[in-house]
Length: 260
Image 1 (tube, rainbow, N blue to C red):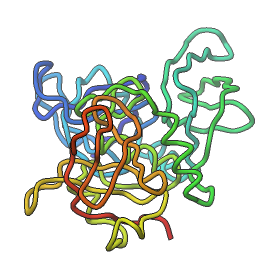
Image 2 (cartoon, rainbow, N blue to C red):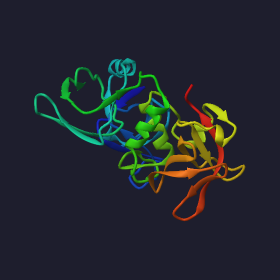
Image 3 (cartoon, rainbow, N blue to C red):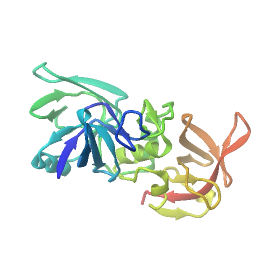
Image 4 (cartoon, rainbow, N blue to C red):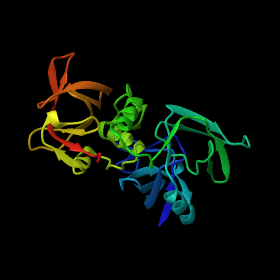
């Protein structure tokens, strides 16, 4: 078994080995992976947080020894809340770029450490050990407002509906699966839309079909979700209503509560 860490801002994860294959996910800076196989210059990886598999270019993942991997697993997660950042090592010999949601390994006292290099970072951060509230969820959701929709995306520069939900909850200290069809199996069911609270998840799809969309309830009658971009729309017992077109765009299937 081999282990790796993503040290680039964004790395595409594809359904099959090859640059032209479908994008299904993204690695963000600091993401840890288990390497399960290799075909030529492509690695089959499994992400640690959600056990999601896919193929990445060998040049875009850094191998690390098991001892270092385990050490990173056991430390407190610290995430960047800055839209985009560039940091330079104290010795001035290397620099790194990362986005909102990046995990900063070995962070302490305003700096993080990778492979013996110390990188000062004065930007806003959060930890995964803070008590999660609806206010946390809505605050982090707002960080992605206006982000363009991208299938398989997990960054403010391109994100899909389930990636958006997953990242917001991850920043809030709650790990969810990658896809909406998996996320719907988590949490406690809320029976009626008028019982929904801020921070609840609403899931959508055709009757008796697959779950195809998810968003975060922001208050009475509103939802923030990634569709075209990340924005807020009206929601009722039928689904999401687009005021600009006066039409329903997504059919409501169920609501789940992830917060205690």
